[in-house]
Image (cartoon, rainbow, N blue to C red; front, top):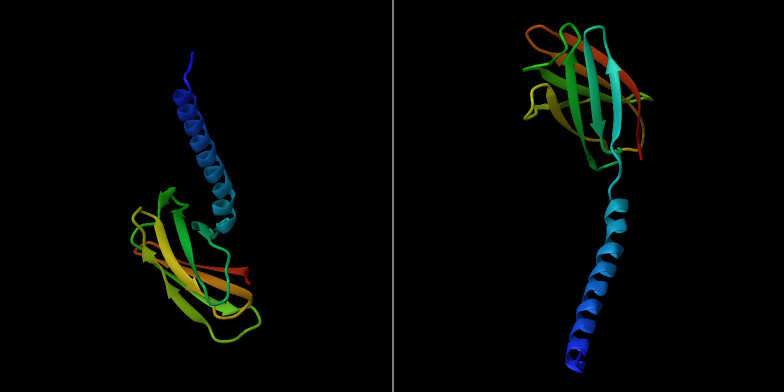
Length: 144
């Protein structure tokens, strides 16, 4: 037979496990809802493929653009390039330039984009290295 102290011990253990599960399960959905899904686009010129991802654009908040560039002539990542984004409101106005940094992996570049106002923007990606000099004008970047 199980004595009273043993029964209390196992009841306390089960209660503790139940409490931990409730806390763990209750906090998981909140963490998922705080994170916004990245936006991904793939665009082409005759010479390069530009696959890039970025967090949804919000006025006054930085968004990191992770830019993956591939040379279509040989399928290799674009190495040692200067990558510049020229950004302008679709309705016109002054352009701003953002220079991307070379990422840790060959062919990947990172640009920190922060736009002050809500609205629609156009971005021209300029990719230049010893063998490439490509401009890729893109539209429809919405800033909330």
